[in-house]
Length: 449
Image (cartoon, rainbow, N blue to C red; front, side, top):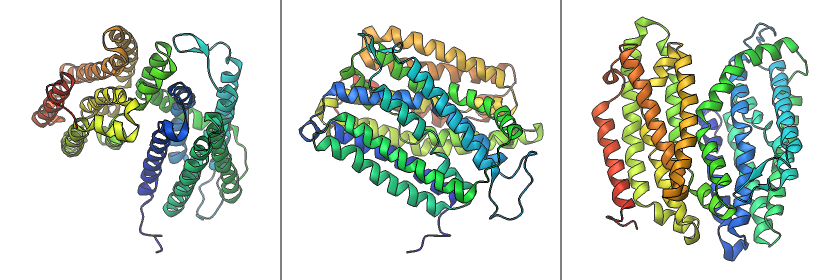
């Protein structure tokens, strides 16, 4: 069946995010089957640490560069506006150069500091450094493939590309491990897929990009992109901070258990961030404020009606899910996962959206800095009592406190009542229900299937 014209470009990108999540979830599930792969928890922990480092050192600038590229595509003062949709784009080529520059820069930093970065409680060196460097260089330019298709309005190509690369990735990563060739051959399989993606990116650059270097465009891109990069760094850092705390205070086996559980409700963060970002422009004038807050309240309520009940159901079955998905050896990961499900409480209120929309970003920035500092301190303090579960517990608590601070600031400084943009009764009802369930499960008052 020909799907062209029946799929939106937004769905294409959503499909890409969902596929990436599912692909790595399946890989994780395969790796835990010791009777199939013969991998130890230590080996799995080292693999997860490599993936954590690769993601933590790139997610913020890749996202910032891509997000800046989209509004600048065929709409900037450096390159003339193209009337013919089929003309090649110099913006694509220069964005590729930026991604390549950052990729090589951070990869070089990893290589030069390879003997000075210590992980785990015994302060050993970072594992698999050379494969990590190669993977880092290849994998951080290839996200541009999907966004080339995006700006060319080709959703079917996004789905086709993502589907087949995901299938190949599952095979070349899992097959060598199942064949008994070890985790390193699985890592090289992951690198081979990144190389294939990079080659396809070169094909698309030849097809759609005009190879025209512009220092002026790069300056414009960076001037607009650096605030976004910093924003992404602050807003998305908590999960990586948690991961590094777990690695520095534990051993590979414990780190593997933590990483397998360190997952929020799938897509909750994406949906919440999407709503917050979509509403930003609605707070541009005082005339639009009242309507914008009304819309924010109603749209957040719709999200609550979907995501809170889903969180409640998943929390109840979390131990069963983890014992069957990752085997009984990783049941302890479900405790970490249950705490991360509590993050939905802070995700469902949006005081920061109002502040950013009103261009009061300084308050949001300092709140984020304070959140990071407190997150580290509280998480470390909770580890002696709660073990690795104390790390997400500290994160969930500090996230809630940060939102309370911003709500209080809006109320006392901007005179904006929480009732204007938060469906308080539903929010408190769902939050109390989720917290009650968590306490009952944690205290073994109710038993999970």
